[in-house]
Length: 206
Image (cartoon, rainbow, N blue to C red; front, side, top):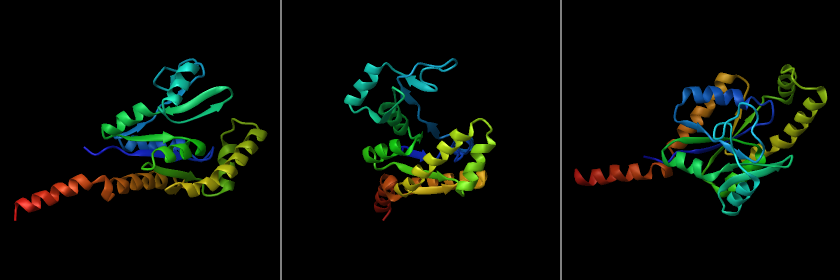
């Protein structure tokens, strides 16, 4: 069994990442969404190991010191990050693990695990991104402006990713992601053992 892929996916807020991933997971039962860890308190309805692994600050910092976090950051006084062990367990079972993560965390993971597949999802234009944010109807104008400003800071980091996918039509974006994953699985270094088996068999039938 080949080891699964580690797939890092980033996008600016309003880029449609959540909708695309929902469709992608519906079409591929070999995908697993990584669960992050946090030191914040659970909200009503949240369960340990489902939305997050809820840890004490001391537990989280111990994982950091032991090198057991793939990436982490602090936000509003709480830690957030990706535990290494569950990700590696899923990959060892041949599952493709998806990390839905911001660009800072993506950079940390690429440094630790350079074999990961990194994909940046982009809106077709800033105008479309603004329209999508405003069409949500859930945020004040000032919040929308902040999200757009953050997007302008994040989008230049697309150059640090292996692939870019433009989210113009949902169906096309999902198929682009599926094509990327299929192509990655066919790379020689991921199939070297299988190639060697073919060669060994070729020797026996001479």
